[in-house]
Amino acid sequence: MTATFHAPPVIIYGGNALADLAPQLRRLGTSRILLITDPFMQANGVAAAVAGAVRAYGYHLEIFDDIQPDPTDLNVAAAVAALKQMDGDAIVALGGGSAMDTAKAAAVLATNDVPLAALEGVGNVPIRGVPLIAIPTTAGTGSEATKVAVITDTQRQVKMLLLDPFVMPTVAIVDYELTLSMPASLTAFVGIDTLTHGIEAYVSRRSTPISDLFALECVRLVARHLRTAVAEPDNHDARDGMMRAAMMGGMAFTNSSVALVHAMSRPIGALFHVPHGLSNAVLLPTVTRFSIDGNAKRYAEVAHAVGAATPDQDDGVACARLIEWLIALNDDLSVPLLRHCRGVSGDAFDAVKAKMAEDALASGSANHNPVVPDAAQIIRLYEEAY
Ligand SMILES: NC(=O)c1ccc[n+]([C@@H]2O[C@H](COP(=O)([O-])OP(=O)(O)OC[C@H]3O[C@@H](n4cnc5c(N)ncnc54)[C@H](O)[C@@H]3O)[C@@H](O)[C@H]2O)c1
Ligand SMILES: [Fe+2]
Image (cartoon, rainbow, N blue to C red; front, side):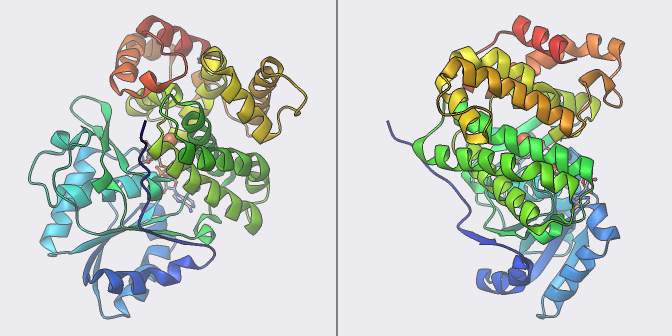
């Protein structure tokens, strides 16, 4: 069996990596740049500083900041319109997964004259997009190193996946100093998104020997650094560790896959606007317990990697310890139950459970889970996690 490995052609990593942005734009031969950023980066002045540094090189740059968490097809259309209006030849994304995914979708929509929904699915992007430099400001999604963009279709109220090598950023600039401003709860939730990427990539039915390396290093780094990054926001070593974990988690799952946690979490995001990392966190212990029988050996290896189990413990014990470890992590990081997440009421949840299960199955990620569930089992898992 063959396996393919995709990653950004260039990754610039470390404190002050951001200083390499203008030289990278020069290398790419671009000169009219749209900076897609989220309102937080606009408000705290980082976007303006980045814009100033690029303009100082003589490039024309305009800022687009109409980004919302869980970005929509409308955000993407507006970004493409802004790029066309300025006659732009490259995009820089500065922000979390929402800004980066908007930019990734806009980059390919700019060169493919079709509705965004036509690019949905696996391998449906016919033409390469405009060059894209992705600069993450959360240590979470790893989107800077993935060939997927997640965009909400406002008509169907589902999160669409655009999964294609052409969606991979041309350059990733990964500067942990940009994450120092993340408050504790954001750090915690995006960090559990990273952990979920590492675990799901490792236990996925599509795991590969190369993605395994990144997946295990990702979970090790999260175990070592996430609690510290939450408790000590200025701890550079912990921020650095989490940033590496996020990037490696992205490199792992984009070459393996995510699985049932992500399949079930996307409908929660699309319908209730629960932040992506939080919706993963509330599901992770329950879905892991359900899935362990499908590949106890791999879950035990995860337990050993995060230090939840000792080398002398057999797979059964190690898997049990892993569940306890995940529950303790959620407790330590103050992850609420799903029913306590803002906007999720009992009646509303009951009314959409069946649709959510259908959407979870339709995304395809559930098929890569060690235990492949049916709709009734997914509904039961939603109820258990609720
Ligand atoms: N493409 C991928 O590979 C991939 C993988 C996982 C998730 N996703 C998607 O990414 C999105 C979630 O991205 P996210 O978790 O990074 O959150 P986000 O981009 O939605 O940002 C969350 C909030 O954090 C703020 N923020 C960003 N950086 C900050 C900083 N340094 N300091 C303080 N506040 C900051 C933003 O303004 C926003 O309000 C979801 O739509 C999810 O589906 C994509
Ligand atoms: Fe994720």
